[in-house]
Image (cartoon, rainbow, N blue to C red; front, side):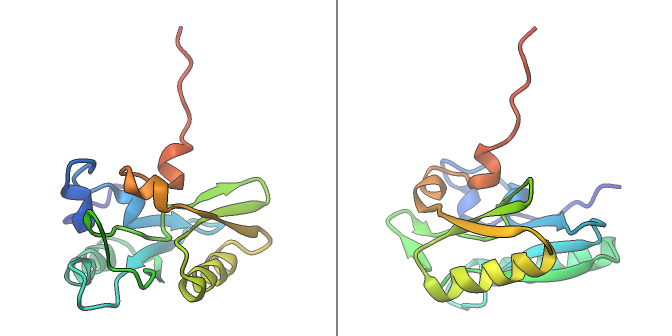
Length: 150
């Protein structure tokens, strides 16, 4: 089954963007894959505050999975405009979760806690991801498999 989301985060439509990269917005998670981790932008001063309710509605209509929001860090902009910083873009590895961090201790800790709840028994470690995000991706994006050349 495919869930088509109406759009991605605002910054994903700039020069480095992919025009709706789902790795920044939502992911199925948990042992049974019955949970959706969803980016949330609680600050009305950020354009994604208006985007995410549309995405949430699409998910609610398309699946009966439990939706768990991962609130964005407090930074709203950088030199390139509205940031697309999110905690959805994480990597699940043997016994651990490698999470993004953004130099916001309150938000980074909150995200680690949410991820620990969704992935029980895994250690959640954070890596400062600001430089990766500045170039149009996240930790999940840069750790994907590379097919062997035949």
